[in-house]
Image 1 (spheres, rainbow, N blue to C red):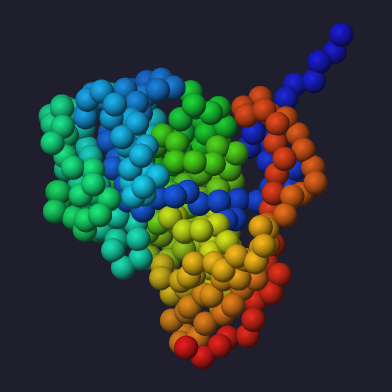
Image 2 (cartoon, rainbow, N blue to C red; image 1 turned 120 degrees about the vertical axis):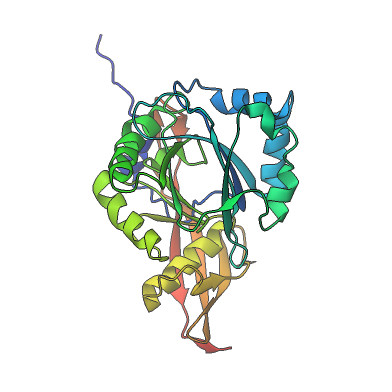
Length: 306
């Protein structure tokens, strides 16, 4: 009897015509803890427990939902031994409140007195300021094979050119968009990257700009607002980090919303966005049945005076 091998979730998303636009995760700030070597499926939970004690993973999950703090485990691309002193990064990714700092620890227990709420709500004061952005590529294959298969080549390529800025990281959401990249503290997320398409993203990030290709959206914002912001950027050609900012959407029914988007050009746009099912389905070896949706921009009104 013949059997049909199921695709992985990232391959299925491409087959079904899903697009990553409007799927950036709910992240307002980050706590990044270096852990080299093997990453078991629960490496994040193990490291957080060693740092902050029993119940730490659950507390961090609540902080993620409530305040937008995302705790991730990081390591350098390639095979590398455990560092003598692990590196820790903390930072904020919100417009007008971006900051990124670095310090080293002797052991994970050195973080026991670190206040995660201060990271989520503060503007620094933890370590040495970092000027350039970090390129965080999800590669946690034990959690989802797609991130290993598609993320590691991206991390290796970026690591060869940007060794100080590139880190592999655990999951920040959206396995089916692998290879995934989070630029911190800029606060923009990219998906369905290859080594070739990741290079211009990294180059522009170093110049304080964003790439519109493969852009999932601005982290920590409503999906409809993410889509509307990208639509205005495409219309105006504005690629500065905060040259375009979307306000909260005004829902019009369950599947559409109107979003006001401001620009540095001195005008505002009103963007009508809808979310609709693609009408197809499939099964993957990673996450079972998929019934994908997609966002569509219905209208971008003429710029209005502010």
